[in-house]
Image (cartoon, rainbow, N blue to C red; front, side, top):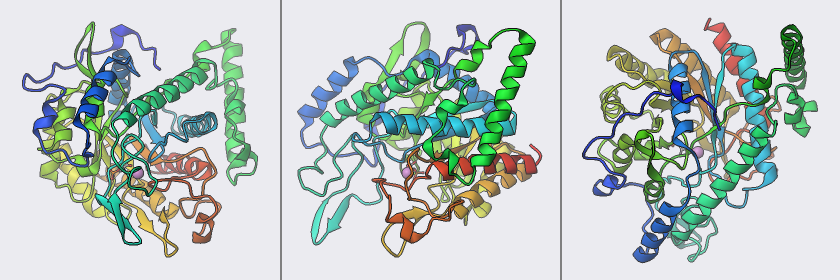
Length: 462
Ligand code: PEP
Ligand code: CO
């Protein structure tokens, strides 16, 4: 979705001689389904290998360059979307509303931070989920756990929970449809800065943030008109934005089938997404996921939880970015508001001391998940906010940059996270809780996060 000229794109590093798209198969692979029908799996993999890619190497390398700038504090990364996409929600409204919120948040960030924003969606492939248990028991019946729509169905039914490789083909098609719609919206002027009112969601007028947001949009409109009057022409570059995609590359059978070589660029690219990441549960140094990721030329990221030691982190950095290539590696810390002050500084110091080049990203969601007394998995807005604010302070104290945020959010008016300007309570969760996995910020809570990032970054003088 980016149109960076080829001359600006650095060459990708050559893969190690002992790596291939399938070398992960020789390592312990956690969180993978056991497919009962090996022949069906092989046939599906062959079919997937022959399908056209979802993204191009050129876009991937352009993103890598933007991430390199974010590493240096010259850009800010906004990465957000659903915890898990579902096949059922691959629909016009859900996709366009999510895009609108991401555009609105990025407008708040560009305006407030005075920095270009790198926009990366958690979509067009976010279909596989790591789970804390392999089985689920209800009323004495135990079934395999739901692992995302790319693997099995959330219905609590023995047949529905059997991992089905054909779901990978459906996930690929749904990802392509999502990507196609996003590309068309953006190319058709959906993100045109001349018309930010196109991105308005019905809620904007009722939101507690409506006045701030409308004031900012009016100010931007004035600035655009002023610049164009000065230049004597319409600025076409304001008509569109770059938008990239990411997902947790968990299901390695699928990822392997999308790993390709391309003419005129060295290396292997995962062409199912621009920016895959490794989840916290599969980030072991000797595991299959690190093995797969080390050989691809995409920019990649790793989740870093509270149990990771500085030494372990340095070894993961060595494995995934041995040459310190700019823009190659993002570290997404997800400690929780109660742990970040204890756990993050030692990691920042170690990476700083060794002079390693990484993009630090704060996931303020996954360390803050809890269950309510009425049985909902939720997150408190106050904890999400606190983790982001502490992250800015801790990076400032360590002399490192917090280069971006990673959020679970939606453009729908769901009630899944507690708090925020409307002060959602446990009772509100019953009203519109839709997530099949983790609770997401709704549009108002997401916009509020963008506003607080601007305030906080300003307050620490960055
Ligand atoms: C996720 O991003 O949805 C996720 C499962 O995160 P983590 O690996 O950090 O737990
Ligand atoms: Co999640």
